[in-house]
Length: 417
Ligand code: SF4
Image 1 (cartoon, rainbow, N blue to C red):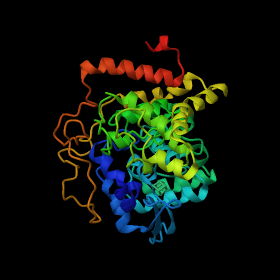
Image 2 (image 1 turned 90 degrees about the horizontal axis):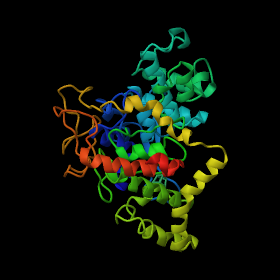
Image 3 (image 1 turned 135 degrees about the vertical axis):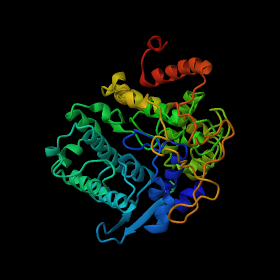
Image 4 (image 1 turned 180 degrees about the vertical axis):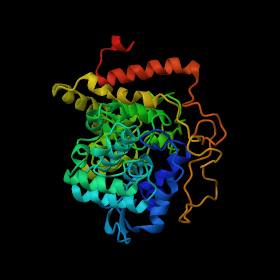
């Protein structure tokens, strides 16, 4: 995976998530985008990439320096990363890589968070298509999904707070609330959910729901064990064992963050490799931390076991209530509907074969073949009934999940039982 990150950047994830039908598309209406390959890391490398770029001393260098020569969007800068490429791409129904890259450059220059920006544009397009945004509010722009020029213009207008951009600058939750439909904002704690559909990757859904800072993937990146084949290589579509892994990832990530590390650097270490919490973080990372900064493994383990709860305690002291943690319920109606890749690709299978190449001629990275526990790609023609969960196990797992969830948000156990 580290090789893939260095070669194609984090945008390498576009085709991988699309293969398993969990690339949120059209503001999370679907999980499959037929034109995803045009926006992925393989295409970026073959067209706009100037050079990879890394943080200090990093051997992976997952960052991208890009240049657009087309006068329409001419610019040079950094990105897009996977999340920006997704929300300005598939989530907004856009397959124009130059437009996506230009909007990302604008976000850099105007100080905008690219996930919030792209996801808010997707939310606005959804509201517009449902008739909730009157034409007179659209400043003469066509806000339908797929309009790349509109997306670039909205990004600039938001940064400068011009026209409808003044409302978009509030973020998708407040924007959708202005038009009476907050349920079109795909957020937790008013923060936009990132690029993994929780219906297709159940553990990351629990991470979104319980993360201290809201809809966030990086504080508990279970994608590495649910999709990328790390450690126990879990089936992403079931909730089995996910409470354990979400808590583990949240605690370990807090310790890695506190040490100034990068979660990508933990992929090849022992996070997840030994299926028990006492061993996580006690291998390569602990040794390097001790060698570089003099932090003992015992101190590091203490960080791991205490930081996440400490942050939650601080939030509670500042007035954070349990009700704030449950704003994912606003989007529940959409997340309870089946996730279907064939809806957007009738009669066609969009999954990559062993020798598949991107439209730009680059080989596509593939997830490991399914063996019953791994992420089994869903081919067209299969009945798509949403997330497959073993009914007998569901009862036990749901109880565990509820316990974990309620302990994380600070509700009394009797409410959880
Ligand atoms: S430290 Fe992490 S984020 Fe920075 S370039 Fe390396 S892999 Fe990417």
